[in-house]
Structure formats: structure tokens, C-alpha cells
Length: 169
Image (cartoon, rainbow, N blue to C red; front, side, top):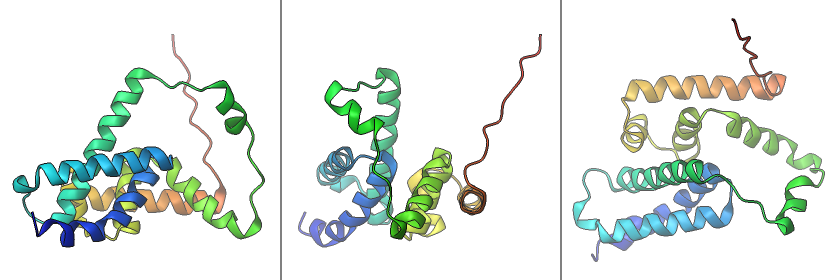
């Protein structure tokens, strides 16, 4: 257990960034990181391979479980929170590009967003990102390529128009 702190403590800022990017809610992200760290401590003897990949895998899996759980439960908005959700202060010019980049990343499908965040923001190698997500390295590379292209197109052209499907009788 003595070797736990020096290995895990430097990962906490990255875990928080990744959790915030996934959940888009600071408090929920902090709760997720806390749950992740609890799992890391209680399962320290079960770790295998690179500690960083193992810890990010735990965080990712916990986040995916929360997404599935939230989809089953639906969302609840309290009346006192409704006004904050409906009104938004105008952004300052210095933040426009950052806001656009965040919007572009948020618009990505979940699989591409996870890869872009892990490789582009958290600086994980393709192999480590593949371990975290439980997919082959080639899948990480193709998702990253498609994700980066979508972000580039979003920044150049704005959000893409949704595809409208016709029903054929």
C-alpha cells in the first residue's frame, strides 16, 4: 500500500479533467474521481500492467456505468435550476475559440470523444488508450482520426446539419 500514493497522486488532475469532459458537471466528475480512487485503493492488489492505464480504465468504466444508469432513470430538473439551464451569459471574445473547441469535442460521438480526450488531452499512448477503452489499437487510431477530422470541420464550418431520414411506406 505504501507504493500506492506516489503512483496514483500525480494522476488525479488528469482523472479530474477526463471525468469533467465526460460528465460535463464538476460535482459529478469529482464524485466519479472519488469513486475511482476508492476502487483503486480497495483493488490495489488486483492491478495489472501500467498503473496509469489501469486507473483510467477504472474511471472510464465507472463513467460508462453512470451513463447507462442515467439513461435508465432519465433526468430530473428542479424548478430552481431551470432558469440557469434556460439562460446563458454571452461569452467573452477571448473565450470563443475555447468554447468552440469544447463544443466540437462535446458534439463527437462518445467513442470518438473518449479517444480524443485520452490521447489528445491526457497524452496517453495509443496502446494505453486501447487498454482503457478495451478496443484494439487500430480502432483507437481510426476513432482518433475521425474525431480530429470532425473537430476540424466543426471549427471551420460550425455544427453539421443533422441527417434527416425519410420514412418509406
